[in-house]
Image (cartoon, rainbow, N blue to C red; front, side, top):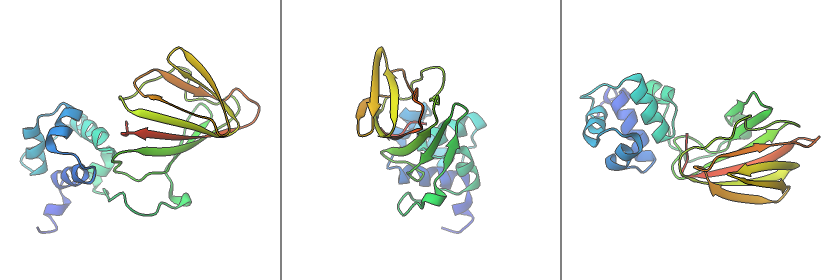
Length: 186
């Protein structure tokens, strides 16, 4: 295959799908797009709208920019601490992504939570994955559905991400948690 064929949106969608180990049918189920449309897109016989690209990127565990710009890479290899993607949230929570895109079967991250920091004022749900949270340092309060939990360093909990949940640090010192989500949700 020539290098121009490797530099197309269709090629990048197919590469991301294969790196994640998804069949056309599984990607179709995850996105609501027909397998025929995805196949046509992968073979450069169809174009995608921005909304469709966002939908595909979310299901493939990559950013829309990665699909468009072509920076999709295999997730094997070392991720140096200095290279970890960092997301600073408005509510006093800083998230560090520990797994490389495209995410296949699990997403792992840590988070530093300032005193009073949280995952947000409102509880949220995402996908239908298994989520595991372990308190590494400090003390955090985690609500899962109607249940309220206090986790101290070394304590952990697991639950379905489809249940409303929210985490906050009500203590006077910062806290650190580890999150594992399988399969990844975006």
